Image (cartoon, rainbow, N blue to C red):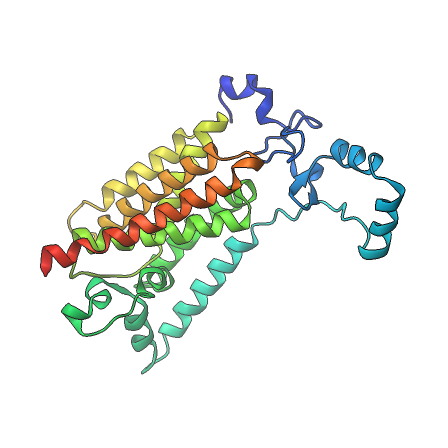
Length: 292
């Protein structure tokens, strides 16, 4: 379901298939194109008309060189399956199975969960920075794993095709880091597990992008609000800090994505994402001053 503003804005639909919503632009003419119309090119994807124009402008020498040095021009439809989502779910599920192995699983879970003092040799005598990300791989039980992976599957199958696999994975990792950093700042000595921070980050990005393209995100916002409130209810044993941190980063990354859609903004997008990552690292120095 989409809003009236979205329905009236034709720029949010494929110019060749007016009934198909898309978040991808042709890198030459900058018109919106759906997956069926996206043709891989050296600079990203282009539309069929730009491909035809490009072929028509080639000189005989260029055509000869292309026949000699390249394979047949790729004209297949871009694979829009949420493979990164499936891969994350598969790796997380496999990790959960490993943690069930008697005499070994507990050691794995302890090594992967996030525990902020493990980042500071001054406090714990160890330095294990991988915990910032690996905490999303371990869960406290089957229901914890199942609910997080169900949410990841529901969001990922819609969000990953819009962003592309690289951006989706970047969003997932930064959101995971955001949740860990928030725990380090707000609940320093608490050990946490789970992909909730990453999932909340996906929620946040989906809301920002959905609002930008005019989609009705009211239902998503309600679900997000309910889950966020649950984290503050005594007795649920949920890390609201990870939820808030992941959500904040997801909202910010989603904003970066919608503001840097153009082909000429790719470097700016990478720089802004790197800046978010650097800011998260900088925040991890705060506990040195608070608890040092």
